[in-house]
Amino acid sequence: MQNCRICKNKNLVKVLELGYNALANSFLKKEDFSSEKVYPLDIYFCKDCKLVQLGEIISPEIIFSNYLYVSGTSDTMKRHFMEFANDIIQKISKFRDPLVVDVGSNDGTLLKGFLNSPVRILGVDPSNIAKLAQKNGIETFNDFFNKETAQKIVHDKGKAKAILGANVFAHTPNLDLFMEGVDILLDKDGIFVIEFPYLVNLLNGMEFDTMYHEHVFHFSITPLTVLFEKFGFQIFEIKETSVHGGSLRVFVRKSNEKLPENIQQFIDLEKKMKLDLVETYITFAKKVGKVRNELNRILTELKSDGKKIAGYGAAAKASTLLSYCGIKSDTLDYIADKNPLKQALCTPGTHIPVVPTKKILETKLDYLLILAWNMADEIIQQQKEFQKRGGKFIIPLPDPKIV
Image 1 (cartoon, rainbow, N blue to C red):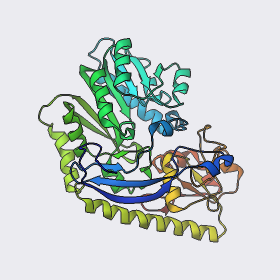
Image 2 (cartoon, rainbow, N blue to C red):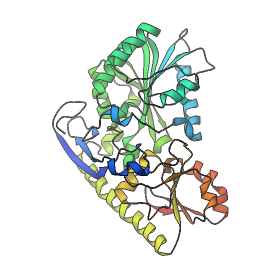
Image 3 (cartoon, rainbow, N blue to C red):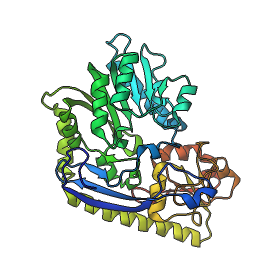
Image 4 (cartoon, rainbow, N blue to C red):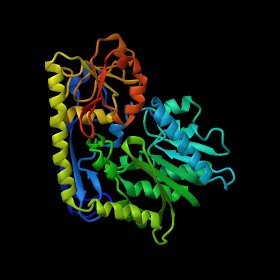
């Protein structure tokens, strides 16, 4: 890696190595094991603009060609996106017949929240999952978002009063091209709203498993102000949400005024937490190694006692955790997941079978390792019968524990 992807300077330091990993959402069949590719997963810190970013970028065309993450699988995310939609509806209620464009719209779960409101909606998504949205009646432009896409939408639909990007902005290798598209598509009094897991929460919660090739950036507010300023935009509001281990919803508009006071509070917090110092990330990397050792100790002891263990949640984050910790099918019998697109496939890199959740009660299990730990409350609630039969849960982060 040579240049920072926001400030373009070369003052970069590698702060964490997570080994060679397969792409986190590239679940595969047994016959494809021999042709599977792995890539280095290294994290860098820019000492100039303070951006935390991936070293080697994998082409988005490769990542999203056979994508299996579906937003609507989780009840937690469905509720969250309904609240998100209502928040935006209130923000743009003064406009007549406003257009809302959701970039990275996936299966259209977020846009469904607008269906009973006086709002025109359009999804933009490059993956195969866009077909699910189209089947559900959500008009979706099946392509990457850039200047050309933005110009086409303006030509066909007019300017947007709101452009949304829920967990997509941090996946975009070329932020400049994305912002050029926003600049073209957004009306002069419109808003650009992004959501992403907050770096502060990632560090506090030891959420290293959220680091995978799809996530090019791990954002804090400090480098984002540098990026938006470059394009004549400004953050005017930030809301904290609990999803994905703690996220921010950031509201942006065309402006070059003085930074609002509540935005400055986030920058001050980042300074206080020393997010501007490389030593903070070196310390984090050491803690990551300790988490791996402790989780492996727990699993090894349980297996040596003859306990049967499976995983729950074939999330993308599971791919990083399993690969980095070296957890394979000799430790986990299988991973249960509600997403039918992942069932009958195996996890990237570690090749653990993914099965329907009903298998949990069909097999004599002692422990479930909750890999989708951000949904732990929802999962434990769903698995009351497993618990009633004496089953226990292992939560891997921030400190591995049995509950």
